[in-house]
Image (cartoon, rainbow, N blue to C red):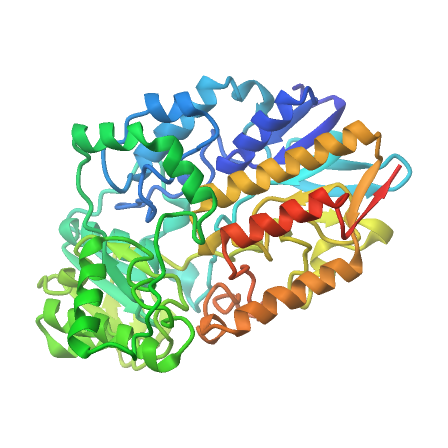
Length: 536
């Protein structure tokens, strides 16, 4: 596309990660004129940006991949149980090449504004490259964890060393050999990167506000026999995951953690710990995410493991979470994280007792001391679920922006549409299972539902589709209600927006799981897209 021209399309997709690429493939197969705008220089989404040391998926490779093409899953070879960022990015590039997707993608192009035109029933999009595009449909495939959170501290401009963010890691890599490195945060990206940074750095100082629960990944190379066996039953496995709760095959036990003997409880917890899976521990009993007393038993089991691994009991206690139920903040998988604190060149600073006062020219002032640093890494996560959706200016009916509409928290119908914004689709948006599941399963469900909806609209000759206010309100109430049956809303997590100052506290994911959500969405479609207004 020539940046100097004004073009009219059937659909524009924002984002060339897993959801954007599949959306492009689906809409192109319908014969629509469709184009993707991508701010990065190539495909990959979060896996293009997140190149920090140790970046790795926490869903097993066989599951964290597309299921829509049987030949693709048979020809691609994963090398490890949990794929690294470079391998996942290589896979995404392979998919883009295999389906010739790049010819319909503009890279290094960020959408600045999308404005709905009621008369023409189109979205007018403008970009930072000066492009103007009219499109009948606008599909936001921007990802749930793609808008980096950049906290500010006094004196940051004075620091003479280098600052980095795990979500915006330099593509050429960073050599910290012999340097004094500080890491702010102990979420997933920190837990993955800290062990590797500690191996390189002369001194590594970790600044922790709230410790996280993390389980051993038990990662290992995939042997040929395992691969062959899995590929032989891949189709059957895919169908089962599509109708599972979390998008992976995990069976929730029927017994309460309080109803079995302590020895049996410990046996199950130990088996889950050694399984190296994200969902195993919380599925080992029926009530771990419902009953605070049962949850505390699982939490204490993990704390006991921390004490077993970490030599210094003071450090072990600092690393042991007590302020939230286990699982209410996303569990992490790690490789040697807790053992890293046994290294003589690693220090853990507890920001609850020694808060960051300010940055200085040579490091950071915390409590009553200054810590000299050459490199400071912000492992501070993302403005999750809504950040990337609200970054551009999206203007719907009557000049109302999406940011104005969501001022008190996001409101969607099925996580895919919001009233006042016709023909705007949000893939795995707030109000859908998304981050509580294997994202690839949720992405495919949303993309396929959206493509089928657009195909139906085209067949009907419809001008627009828009979520009804009543349906949206009912769905928002339902999402909140089902979350309220669990411990999730008590976690003060990014699921609630708690990591972003001033962000409304709304529990954003849909807790009921992939299969229930799929059934609801299919029922909506089967009933003439109940809850939507179709204009001709």
